[in-house]
View 1: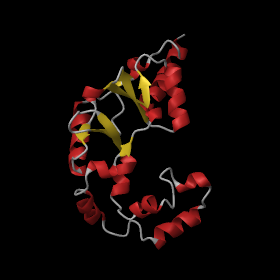
View 2: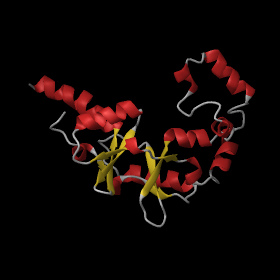
View 3: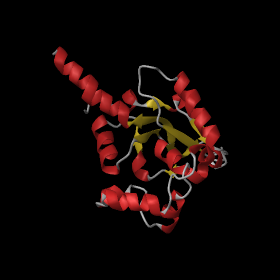
View 4: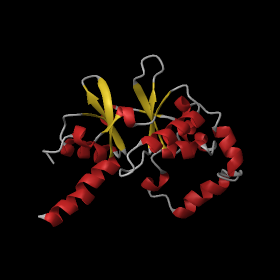
Length: 192
């Protein structure tokens, strides 16, 4: 693991979907679709959109698939505002399937037709939905893969932003790390 560096596996920032924080959700999804079309078809597809500050163009957040889907049902906002349940998921705390089904029914989640929900979500700004980055979500481009894997596991992250000095130059995705050590690594062992 020490011989593989983060920069060897990262996706350059120029190849990733980005939008400004004032963009609407629909603009973010358009940017993701465009990035998917231009991305190497032999690699895993993007699963997030990076959010940049308008003035400086520096990355200030991420919009994940879960963030987008959560935004389609506005009633989930009650949970985050009231801090009743952490966004990490209630199942992590041992809640039974019956309890979780009860919440689904009590709050009438996903009762509206999806087309109506999509219309509402299209009016939301990305900065209202994005995940704000934490210190543990950055890794230096010259760090070895072991350091990055440790950060991914300990932080339960799907990706890390790759830095060169003060600048963000790419993103290291869990899918690429998995491919390198579990799929490509297996192939290399079979060749030997």
